[in-house]
Amino acid sequence: MLRRLLARLFWAFSRWTLRSEPAPTRPTILIGAPHTSNWDFVLMLGIAWRLGIEMRWLGKKSLFRGWRDPVMTKIGGIPVDRDDPARVVADVVRRIRAGEVFSLVVTPDGTRGANPYWKSGFYRIAHETGMPVTLGYVDRTTMTTGLGPTLDLTGDVAADMDRIRAFYADKAGLRPELRTQPRLRAEDAVVADDSSLS
Image (cartoon, rainbow, N blue to C red):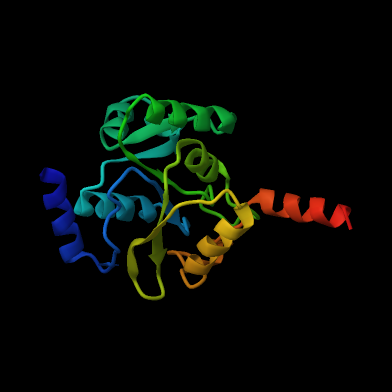
C-alpha cells in the first residue's frame, strides 16, 4: 500500500510519463533497457510499485555492504558476484524452482556504458524456467518509460532477439551515447558456425 502511494506521488511530479501495456499476470523476466544511467533504477522502482509487480533485481555485491544490505534486500535486491555469472543464473533458477514467486528485473546491457553485446543471463534464466520476458524501457526522446509486450521465448536465439531488437530500435535511454544494441554473443557464434559449413 505504501509503495503504491509513493509511486503515485512520484509519477504525479515526475518529468517522465509512465506508459505501459498491462502488467504481466505471471512471474516474468523484466528487462530494463537501455540501461545508461543510475536514474534507471529509480524509474524501475516507480514502474514496479505503481503496477503492483512483486519484483527482485540483481545488483553487484558492493551495493549490499554494511547498512545498505537490509535496505537493498527489502526493496528486492539479490547480490551477485559478477566474476561468476553462471552461479548467478543457477541461484535465480533455484529460487524459482523452489517456489518463490517474483518478476526478475535484469539489465542485460550490463554496466552503464556502451558494450558490444547484451549479457545472456536473462535468456538462459527464461529458457530454464519457462518464464516469459517483459520488455521494459526508458526513452529520453519522448520522456516516456514503462513496459512493452511480454514475449514467450522460442529457443531460436536469433529470431527471439530480432523481436526484442525491433521493440528497442527507437528507445534511446537516458544517455543515448551509452546505448548498447540488443545482441547476444551467441548470435554471432551461430553465424560463424554456419559460415564454416559453407
